[in-house]
Length: 438
Image (cartoon, rainbow, N blue to C red):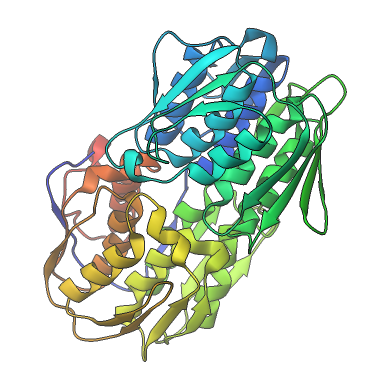
């Protein structure tokens, strides 16, 4: 993986390319938790191998769960609550939000104390809302700042009612309902305010059902009913990551290419697949098949005004396309991106301005007025999505340099190699050395 800054070069138009996107991070980490809690042997196919998923599987190992790779490139998990044990040391989770929030709830089922810690960025990411929810069920949790590190004193997860704020992160809710399948009774969750990123909660509900659990929607929120006998071990296939696919789809718009993403079709479980509707609104041609999606540019892209509350991981992808559009692009209702790996709203505004764009913004919105692109080094803030989104802009305009290319390892370690394959398909030299001589 490149570590020195990368300067992109524009690609010729008219390329046709198949871009195989790796497995979904969101589904992989949920599947790890469910398989860890299911008694018996589960096999995960298509699982993502990235920094975030490695932190999760390493932590599960420290908690007593066996995780093995197979020659067929699957992952086998020997799980069950009976295997869970308190670790000898703090679980280090880097800046993995899913790992930290899912394991904070799972730790309630572990007899003894479990400490979750991360890097400096994670120490600034709030988790107080989830702590407050777990404390309502009687759990003892030590947390001095409202951000990691935190220590959960577990052993049992009682049933009862939880009131949980919904407008900051859906991961707090998903973590709770993943663990609640092994609670001592039903858990009623009352959501206060609007639930952000609801499609991710629907992924969790669907996967819990796949492993034998049940989560009912109620007028106030959700009711988790622990299944008799707990979760069931199984073989589980993980679809390609729809958030990562947004870069492949955006590349088609940026370069006038036709790009197909296999394995991600019209029945995709992930909410970020809805980003295709946004691209269609700016002028893309989209073909949704049963097991693949193809997108191509259909003339000059146009600016749009769009609410991206439920697909907020793709905000940066659209923002990076905005300089290529006719007219302004307005992105609304995305205050939740301010507590991600960085303050993504301000980071996006700053980097677009660095590239010569005129940008207005408020607490939960930004508006980009396209201007001629000014060559610049894009700062990534150690945020994989900033790096990947602005790399796509560099496929269309000269002078875009990504300062920290290796930060993509968080969710997409092979991103630069896959981009190198796009250069090869276009018959253009790759601006950086690619693995395997691509």
